[in-house]
Length: 92
Image 1 (cartoon, rainbow, N blue to C red):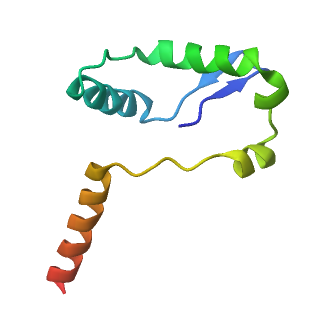
Image 2 (cartoon, one colour; image 1 turned 120 degrees about the vertical axis):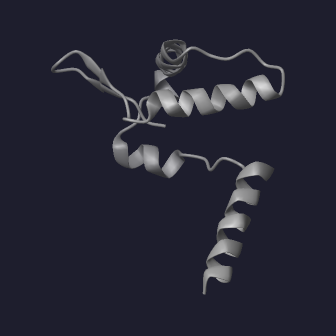
């Protein structure tokens, strides 16, 4: 999930679905017994992590696309994809 810092206007721009995504992630965390994370704490943690290692984490947009690692797929996500595909096939 991308968050943008606008240095000209001194604002942080979040996606429209930012809080929904955080809520979804928190549901998963709680399901496995972990503590939920506040949305603003998530931004602060990522900012502090990036600023602590600017030699490796201060990237241009084009470089960031190359270095981004893919997340492993969860069994739940795989199941949803399979269900969608089955529904498409049965609708035909």
